[in-house]
Image 1: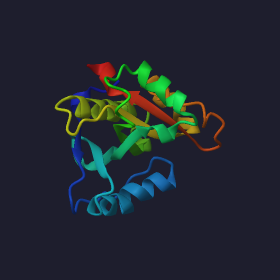
Image 2 (image 1 turned 90 degrees about the horizontal axis):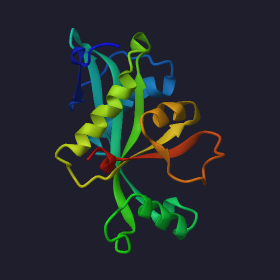
Image 3 (image 1 turned 90 degrees about the vertical axis):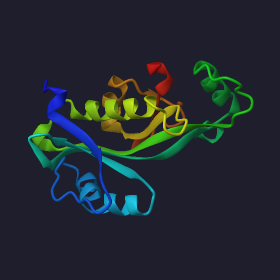
Amino acid sequence: MTDSQEFAVHKLAFGEYVKSFDCGDDDLNDFIISEAPLYRKSLLAVTYVMVRMSDPLKVVAFCSLANDRISVADFEQKTDFNRFRRKQDIPQPKRIKSYPAVKVCRLAVDDSVKGLHLGTKMLDFIKGYFVSDNKTGCRFITVDAYLDAIPFYLKNGFKPLNEDDANSEYTRLLFFDLYSLM
């Protein structure tokens, strides 16, 4: 595994563009090259890029984040939501109908660095970023994981939010409880 000091993560700045990226998925490639600056400008999502310190102009991984929540509407029945919040040991559960989260909208690693666990490093960055000096009161990380990415997220501590989407053809809603890192 590569030393983590070899890589750095920074927020994609206004006016900063990624010129090339290839993770093998045209939609993700197009997002980082064409759409990420538009999402930032429109205040819809913020993208963080990982670069190799020896080549700071070459993006090797990225993640795009937006605000989210876990709410009673995410569950088929209110009793499922109540079970969820009891498991998370959240204070005063009767007063809160939703809990703040950050959504991983997109996450990708360039094919040139596959196998270096940079996807895990990006998730570790997100976890650390929201636990240290919790910016806005954020308890969870959520992701609508593509089916083939689910094992990656499970390996990184994510869990299915509910069983309602267990048979989905495309994605599954997963969550990570940041409180578990405290």
